[in-house]
Image (cartoon, rainbow, N blue to C red; front, top):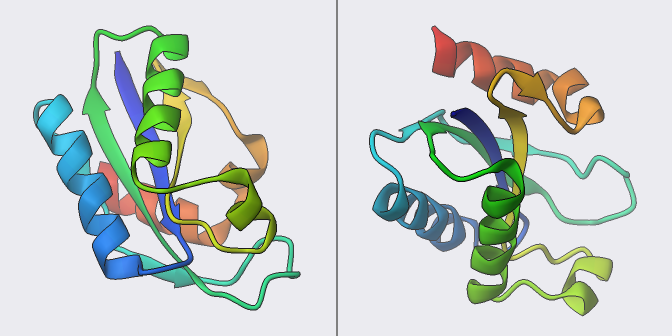
Length: 122
């Protein structure tokens, strides 16, 4: 199945984005990454900027297996609920598209995601 995953972090951005890219590249073949973009928090409440990028790859995992695997990798990289509530997001990886089906509808409306998606598919 073809997959598009969003990657974001609000802390230690260079290292966390690099870690996410390494993790995905070690697990999946031929991962294609968009360039990274600095973005404002979507809820406007955090005082932190985020670094975001997209990854596109194929997988034999089911949607639920992939979602669980991504959440486990977030935790491996130090993500926890307490920090997230404070605006510190060590690593966030979400499935935006799986086998042609879109998820996270609000994320598809974000200008930065549309730009990165165009870059990936271009």
